[in-house]
Image (cartoon, rainbow, N blue to C red; front, side):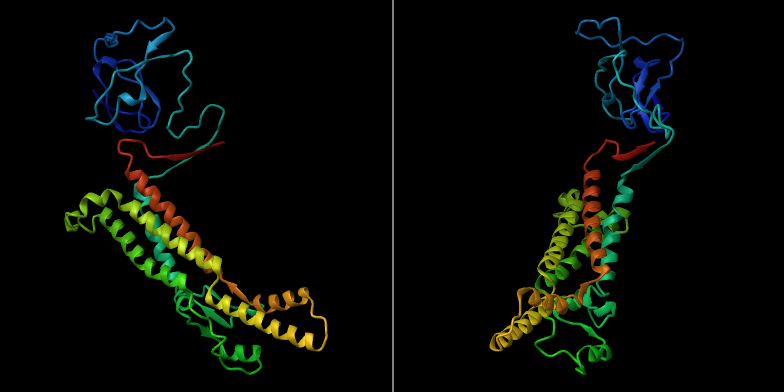
Length: 331
């Protein structure tokens, strides 16, 4: 017979021989009673070569025997009713002893949006400052992702004159150099963004599957896995650049060490004491004006979220016939 689970309202196919018995839904795990099929005749359990169960047990089908209409069924097994643990009902009601419940399901319809949205936001953030000179919290020199990669910068000349005794621009040896890892990051980010959005449009039906070359179609089942792998590689490039430092940070630190080394030589000639602590303090004073913005950290965490979202979407597409994972909180 065909019926619906009273808890999750999913269609199920149940053999007529289990009419009047207690069943367990394979999708939500809740138990329900199968309606009797006329005459009130009790349904008999199927024949089996195994010895009859003890008196304290009854025939109860297992959760894996039934699914949506058209799915094959297997032989039910016997479980002792006296020792089986209670099955929580997935009806939005809390378990015994709890007053409230809240559950969040991870569905492909939602998770497929995570990576594309994160990458679009990162693309926008790349045109805002990621690193710069901020003496006293005031913006004097800033670099976005593209500027930091190729050595470009934006300079407030008036503030820079005040900071550097009338100098209107940076000298050649003071200009920030390129950030090599960030160049590879940006060159890989653009195709990753394009692929991620294309996979989303394919699932939304904006791009037809017929437009995919026949040689590529067998690989389509791995599409979210490929998106997750590319996003992970892009994230690692950005993380490594942050570990090794941007060109501006390296330039300021190198310039500060050279200045301190010159003062050490002068102090030695004058036979004056210039201790290690004083040297470290002066280097710190010169380099502490260089800082990374919150927008850079936001981009980094958006990359982490994009990797998680793409990998979750891949895992959800690779579990046909299984219920979606969920987090449930009861209090």
